[in-house]
Amino acid sequence: MQVERLSIPEVMLVTPRRFSDSRGFFAETWNRAAFARAGIDVDFVQDNHSYSAQRGVVRGLHCQIAPNVQGKLVRCLKGAIWDVVVDIRRGSPTYGQHAAAVLSAENFTQLWVPGGFLHGFCTLMPDTEVAYKVNAPYDRDAERGVIWNDPDLALPWPVGADEVKLSDKDAALPRLAACDSWYSV
Image (cartoon, rainbow, N blue to C red; front, side):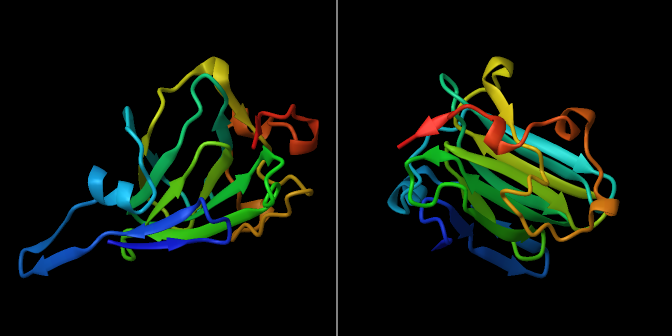
């Protein structure tokens, strides 16, 4: 397993080893002890899977606050996504900054998103499937979000605004400046 810390050190890109032969490949995508040695020491409680039919689907920017702050281990099973996290921990030296990576079925990378970060992604191809593990259950009352195109964040989305497809819920999210301080360090 290869682990790379991104521009925000708590956010990590993890690439599992694949063992290929004429039949295809085998890979271990999660191993508690190996991930703990890499600094990702969590107990996952739920797996989620999303399918997006079109290029330009944006899901996010989402997080959960206490008592069910979620960390996520995200991977792309089919197609490709531009995956982004934003540090929203007040007092953090990287507050308001983002880290991003392309995750695809081809590059086989996973992104560790710790609690205290907004998370979102944009599909780069049609028929894209994403799976992610979380270390806290879904909690509607703890769910929060920020609009994908908040000008204060100035995220470099890989598709134009005219290509973006959003849920009604995500289209109505507030800007970060209008939100309470959800996390602090």
